Length: 317
Image (cartoon, rainbow, N blue to C red):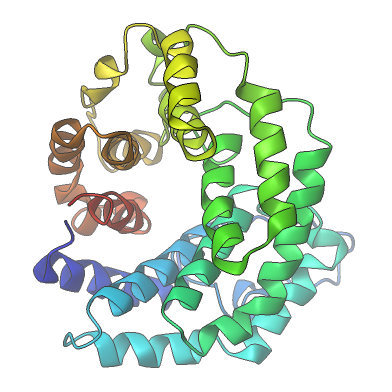
C-alpha cells in the first residue's frame, strides 16, 4: 500500500519535477521558421518533468496523494502547485496546441491516456481542477474514440505506443465520466485486437525499451472487459503456462541510462498488473526491486518513476 511516508516522498519528488524546466525532451512538429519553440510558452501547465507526458502523470501523482492523504503536511503545497499549473488559461493554451497543426498526433496515445487518467483522479477528488481540465480531456477522449475506431491493429511494444495500456487508463476516465462512446470503442478494439490471441511470447520479454509488459497489460485489459468465466478461458489460451515468468525482476546494470531506467519502470508496471491480476506476492517483490530508484538517483528515472510506483502501490492492499 501507499504509506504516508512514501506518499510524502513521492509528493516531494513530483512537486520539484513539475516546476523543473530543464533538461527537457521537446517533441515538436514545426511548420515554419517563426513558430514558438519555448516549451513553457507552449505548455504552461505541463512544461516540467523532462517531457509532456511525464509532467502529466506527475500531476496525477499529486492529485492521488492529495485524495488519499488530504491532511498531510504536503497537502497545502500540492494544492498550491496544482492551483498554479492547472488554471483554465493554462489548460486552454494546452488545448490550443493540440488543435494546431503541431498537435494533431502529439503524445498519441500515451500522453492522451495519462491526461484522461489525471482528469479521472481530479473528478474523484471533487476538485476545482477538473473544471479546468475538462475541455482538454473531452477533446482527447473524442480523439481517442476516433483513433481506436480506425486502428486495424494494436501497438504491442512495451513502451509509449502500447495500445492496451492506453485503453486501461482511458477506461478509468470513461467510467468516471460515464463516457459510453469511449468505453464502447475500447471494448470493440480490445476484442478485435486481442480476442483471438494465443500463446503470448512471454520468453521474448523484456526488450531494453520496455517499461510495460505487453503480455501483462493486454491480460489486465481483457480482465477489465470480460466476464470472469470468459476471461479464464481467454487467459488459458493466451498464457497456457501462466504469467509467473514475468514476476522475475529484469536485470538493470545502469540505472542512469534512459533505456535501462525503463526496466525499473517495467518492475513497477508489472507490479501494478500483478496486483490487479491477484498475484500480490509477485507485485510486492517487483515493487521492492524498483522502489529505491523512484526517488533517488539520476533524473533519467526520477522524472517519472514515482508515478508508476504510486500506480503499483495504490493497487496493493
